Length: 96
Image (cartoon, rainbow, N blue to C red):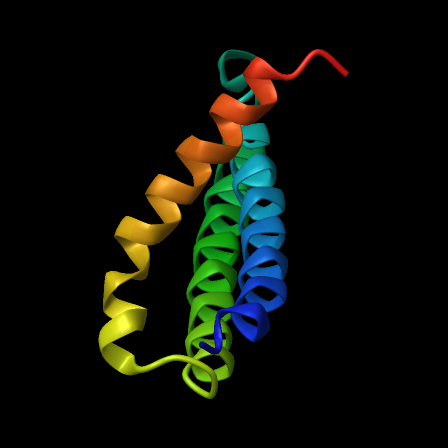
């Protein structure tokens, strides 16, 4: 089917998403010692990152809808979860 076209789009989206999530988790570091101003700034940054994730997802769906059906897009959450689990297990299992 059209899945060979799907994977590059999916992989790029996954990489973007992981990078954004990493940035978001960075915002939670050392909260105890930050100023009120810094806290406000981090809240704004987090909202921007959440918006970016939403924008990335919209762009991804727009792109991926050209190669798979909307029904398959809806099923993607399950596919992605299984796929990530598969990758994770493969990485854990591999020695190189």
